[in-house]
Length: 352
Image (cartoon, rainbow, N blue to C red):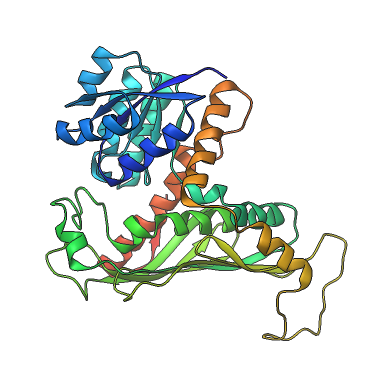
């Protein structure tokens, strides 16, 4: 594998995390530049993970040989930064979500197609062992017809979180609140399990925080192309902070992922009969299922990010299929922004 040269755009909290992941992959990648409008922040990051600090991505692109740009700016700036990198002929990794609207995501898609470069959006939980197990079972038909799912994000963010940056809690730069910012990963997993979302109805409100424009609680229902139904619940007002959970239900199996771990799993291999007389509440995790749960436990945040980086690098080398592309992330953005439109209008919204 070639050793790819990376420029990091954005040296905030998530940028620092990407710097750590890049350092873990030093045999395959090298951090050569960090760009941030607060150049001192970029300098702090480079002092730990290497590279040179720059006040803008344009300055970094002009001065360095760069293969990949990693976009870690506020969400509402993802598009312009990604498009600038693509226009310069670079491959791009974008921190979630790709952008704050479907239309702006489509602009990145067009820029990617014009440049002929590879773009992925960070959806690291697609690489958690628990997610891989569930999606593999669905693909193999072991859940039968998947009819419903739940994406629940019951988190807490104090007022100080929103006050820590002028862009936090704004529509222009955050793109949304609990559903877009905190919930996008779990919504992404619901889409991965249930397929393309086609319609959504939702309510949203700001009930527990001040000085923010976006919602701190949202609830809704999504209809998928297959006919399956999904429930969305996202909040940053659940003190002291609970878990993010995904439920997936089919007529031959079900699963619950709780904080990235496989809390419940039951699948029926194709060709085996189900227990027709089984009643709700009588089925618990069996010994076989427990083995699956144990196998799902080793994953962590940095491991999942590292695995997504490796998938991206493998796709560049032609040895792997890109798991998360812009079109994949676009579906999650469509569901979330559709939920916002529904909450504003009080009507169901059909998704493009």
